[in-house]
Picture 1: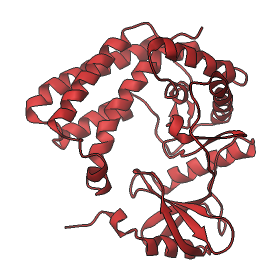
Picture 2: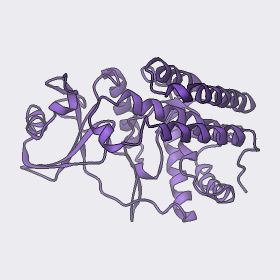
Picture 3: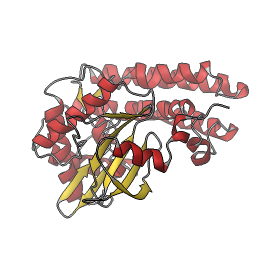
Length: 326
């Protein structure tokens, strides 16, 4: 049975990869929480520990990874608190025994208190600054977040690879088609909103908080899309709570960027696309042994029944008036 490439990425391989670019680890290795890639905190013989990120094979091209690195460099040059890849021997992307990897400084922090209006406003200001840089030019190599990439393509993959149980396939496909119709209506109501380079996965887990404020990490999902994509994942709770949170975020955001309120029609549409894409994301990685171990509930009968109910709820939510800041 062919092994998944990540099964070959043992501690010796990680240390040898770093050694190949002139970085000598001292043997201390701590695996950090990441399923998409493999990320390690590595103790160094000289200096503080570094973080080594080994990219999932075949997910991004080298050019697409380098675009992300360049975007982070642009942000760092504007003193926006991100963690860019370190240049070693004149390069930020390295190759070793079929793996591609990058090295970063280690930045600690705690989860942001997203129920604190001051924290939300502060976060909103920095997201706006990220977007101001992201709007300067588009990505050339990375795809956009849209109905095709997060809706139609995931649907087609799930169908083509027989992940949906036969007795639920008809019901799932019916509600998924309804959901995509609802997404299209939301996009029609929003109109032609601007597309820019985004963080792409800007939720509380990718914001590290210190006394000096936030640090934004993990731009691996960075792509083109509407600004609201980097805002809605900060929202949680009942509708009234989300309205308050959105108001606090936009109070900070609009210190640096004008916000096109037409994008509010896209909040539930983008949430729907993320839910559809998530099932496909799990399915595409099911040959990675880390996934069945971490997500044993995926691809069970109960899983797909819950997805049907979830999408039905989203169909109803997309027909409701959008969230509106107070």
